[in-house]
Amino acid sequence: MKPAQAPSTHGRLGVLLPGLGAVATTTIAGVMLARRGLAPPVGSLTQLGALPPLREGGRALPLRDALPLASLDQLAFGGWDIFPDDAFEVATHAEVLTEKHLAAIEPELRAVRPMPGVFYPEFVRRLHGTHVKRATSKAEMVEQVRDDIRRFKREQQCDRAVAVWCGSTEVFRTPGEAHRTVASFEDGLRRNAPEISNSQIYAWACVQEGVAYANGSPGLTVDCPALEALARDRGVAIAGKDFKTGQTLLKTVIAPGLKARFLGVRGWYSTNILGNRDGEVLDDPESFKSKEVSKLGVLESILPRDEHPELWGNLSHKVRIDYYPPRGDQKEGWDNIDIFGWLGYPMQIKVNFLCRDSILAAPVVLDLALLLDVAQRAGLAGVQEWMGFFFKSPMTRHGAAPLHDLFEQQTRLYDTLRRLARTTEV
Ligand SMILES: NC(=O)c1ccc[n+]([C@@H]2O[C@H](COP(=O)([O-])OP(=O)(O)OC[C@H]3O[C@@H](n4cnc5c(N)ncnc54)[C@H](O)[C@@H]3O)[C@@H](O)[C@H]2O)c1
Image (cartoon, rainbow, N blue to C red; front, top):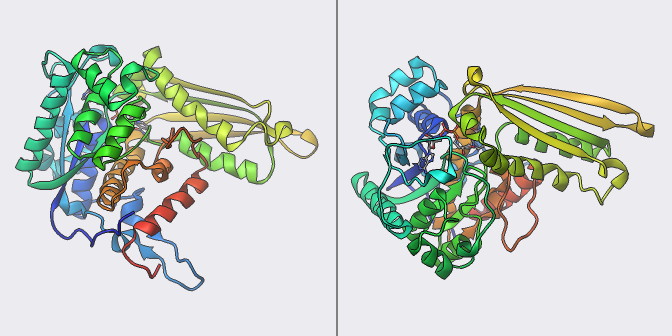
């Protein structure tokens, strides 16, 4: 790792969000409100966190003092969507934020207008995009997105940019031939390989343009050998996948606690109702499959069957998501956890999380954008495993098993932040 550079006191950072929906607009609006002092950036590690002291009596150093993070005033937002609505219209329809909050920043939000999206509809079958690019090949699509990025940076006077995928969950796919190498991917782009998804076209264009990229949804996107190799070659940081925000966040907090006390877990049944557009997309079984795979992985890793077969060997884990329009973005998650204790006596835990999906995701988007920027400027390229803290299905290098326990992830995160910190006093 090269030494981190001095704090970024100059230069604007472009934050590009493919998919200008509820999460993206809640992030953008939140930054606009926070930088005017109209609302607090609750939930954001970069805005509120500090590096814990290494020695007793040492002082915790706020991350914004320890790391060369872009400030909220230095961020310029842009993005793509397959519908033409500006960020104010989208945020109004999403009904995440109050009219009072939106009114305070209306002109600024209205200025964020999506660039036309890349849309091969077979990857998101519930949506019928109207604001889309036309091209004869996927290779040409990549070039159009690259042009968009250059134009955006020029117009917004950004010297660098990062991207966080906030688009709809794409249908479940495993890596295909085109995903194997940089050459096979480029060939696939030219021959319109069906396995190259919309999100991968954005990702390829971003990495080619030196734009760090995080994947907030469970689709493959940057999680394939071709994208990983390109990112390493270009010195670009990538991370993913699927923001860890609600039910899975709590799961990865509760399960380590049960493990620490050697309590048995016989079953974990999780169900959700949500009524936003994300819920509508997940109503398609193929998109749901992507989410299900992402949500199911966590328990096996935290409560390994082999380590204590008598405690966790028979664990039955189920995850359900139901699209239920009346709830909008205010998702409700239930967990029923069947545990057992001393002498095998059974007990139950019920968790009812009445959450707000985009309110939980927005600070994660902001943190990913700022930390990816710092990481890339410090010379970190390729998959950023330490960012697993933010994801349900953390990407790893060389097929290593991911960590899911939030506290282990936090340790890994702080270790890297410490190395990235410009001060040696912490
Ligand atoms: N807590 C959370 O909200 C949370 C947690 C984990 C993951 N996610 C993921 O974040 C993503 C965004 O969630 P959301 O609630 O904002 O959904 P949303 O439906 O409100 O927004 C997604 C947007 O992506 C757009 N889109 C779809 N395909 C596109 C394409 N090819 N190019 C450009 N735009 C495209 C849609 O038109 C829509 O505006 C989803 O994939 C979701 O699964 C959200």
